[in-house]
Image (cartoon, rainbow, N blue to C red; front, top):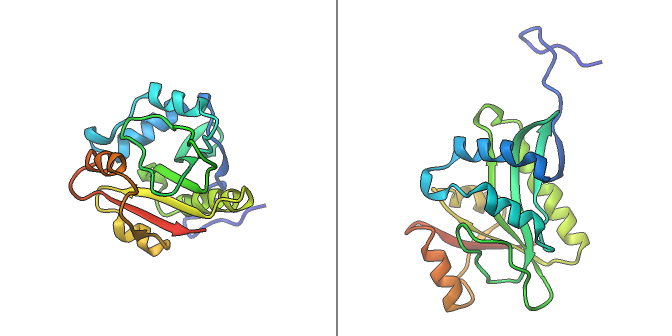
Length: 179
């Protein structure tokens, strides 16, 4: 039995963290639309292709069938940058990095710890899989958020990675942390 909050209503049920599935894509698109500007919106087709990737490890936070938050991620290699609107490419070598491509929380679910729960779940799984790093591209002024979670700015590993990073905009930075 849950105890009522100050308003007299029971607290909202805890969200469930699980692998992202095709049935979640409509909800994911609604979350993305609520959180990003047009330049960062990625299509349902792109997310469907990512789900089919053998290196995909994306997660979603749901209550019932409602998508509250998601974390699009995959196993990659250190220094690689995923193309904006691109698929999750299997690396030529053995993956050593959890690449966080996109994370968003529905505005009306902010403050519930969903982003942290998604991150912790994927970091734990990545360590168990033997990955040693996590990386991402920070956009839309999120650098300080990622720094608080242990990420630091690093230079991309190749000219191709630098070119891909530039497509995210002038403020975008490649960041990395040890798991």
